[in-house]
Image (cartoon, rainbow, N blue to C red; front, side):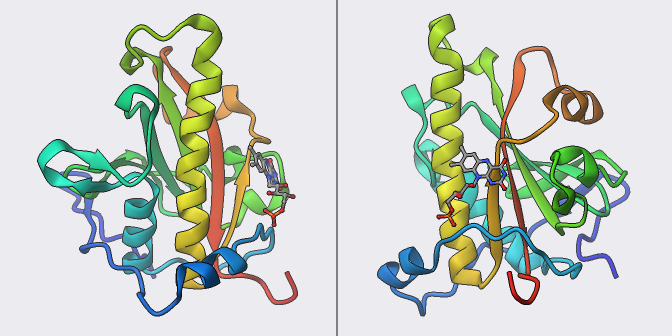
Amino acid sequence: MSTVPLDLETDTVVLPPPRLPDGASFELLLKRRRSTRGFLPDALTLPSLSALLWAAFGINRIERGGRTAPSAHDWQEIEVFAVLKEGSYRYDPRAHRLLLVKAEDLRALTGTQDFAASAPLNLIYVADRARMTGVRPNEFEFLAGADAGCIAQNVYLAGAALDLAVVVRALIDRRALAAALGLAPTQRITLAQSVGLAAHGT
Ligand SMILES: Cc1cc2nc3c(=O)[nH]c(=O)nc-3n(C[C@H](O)[C@H](O)[C@H](O)COP(=O)(O)O)c2cc1C
């Protein structure tokens, strides 16, 4: 059964309000944070997907559009894509919804490690240079990578709170994935991150 109810008229998935369990202490979440590379095939629930995307780079200060992760110069240049079995979507943080990019299973293209093809969720962090006003050429990759790293740590901690397995990944065929997602020349894939229920023994 699909967990992402796509509105076929608008190609949009409206996410429920993001909620993270508040039982675990911050110390416990830091103790639980780890990389896991074995996933059960089970799809994530819509509430989990919602919480992960908000934690990744959602809006936490509505008045000024502040985000859950910092970004250099407040450029907010990272777009978060969610690559699921049902299709690939772009996260729209303002409306907290997913917008369909491609109704195909592109998971195998999100990484060069086998588990990427079967991980229920692969998040892709894409930096848009066009938003990085005045960035020096030799700082683009560094700052985009640092900003994506902050997002990735949020997802690790949200995964720890939700009892989900997580691994951040740089091993990506960026050219192939960018073509499949139809990215613009100003957009650069920085990191990917796989999320799902942990397979036993991983
Ligand atoms: C920038 C970055 C890139 C990474 N790329 C990969 C990757 O492509 N594949 C992978 O399996 N793990 C990747 N990792 C995860 C590391 O291997 C992992 O964090 C490290 O082994 C320490 O394990 P821990 O996260 O459980 O503490 C990456 C981590 C970072 C921070």
